[in-house]
Image 1: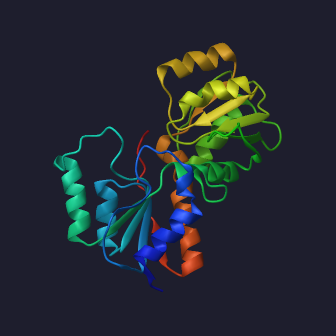
Image 2 (image 1 turned 90 degrees about the vertical axis):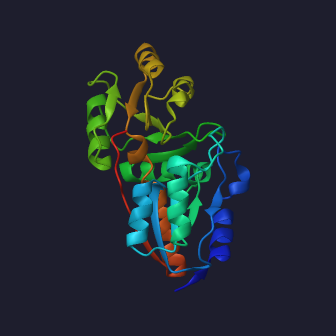
Length: 249
């Protein structure tokens, strides 16, 4: 099936409710390519490697979580930025990117997908934040949760906390969300899971007694782009392929 680019963008903008977010980058169509879309490549980040994969697969569009034009970045179109844009334009490929809207979506969002992958009982968000919370299924220890996460995400998760402690409640926010640890502490959560870790996070976790798991920025944010692609394939009959290009952080 073929779908016009404008119809795809309008559907995604509405489905992901982009008007609700004050983001660090533009959400939606970032680079315009051909108007008719049959084949889409989805991925976490619009790197040169993903663009090359999309060209090889003769994709009409790339749909990612991490796109371009971030707030505060240099404006000139030079170097790596020029090379990426030149490849997209030369091959008439559309680039669509959804950042915070794809973290927050209740069905295909990164946080929703991580919770479903781990089999946690999802209880909601902490206030109006992007942080989700819930309960683990059955008895779990600090070390056991690290192992479960590592196996599910195919990533060597870093755990800060005592291995033998019992974990009943969890909060999580994918990607670079270590700054939300204090919110989990204030809520009385046993463990907080995110993608990255920074030096102050270690001390805060140790001194508060709340377990912290750094499960990989890329690894924790594969779920959203893949699920959104599957949703588009089912709804519109498009040929959609998720291309996973893991990185070590």
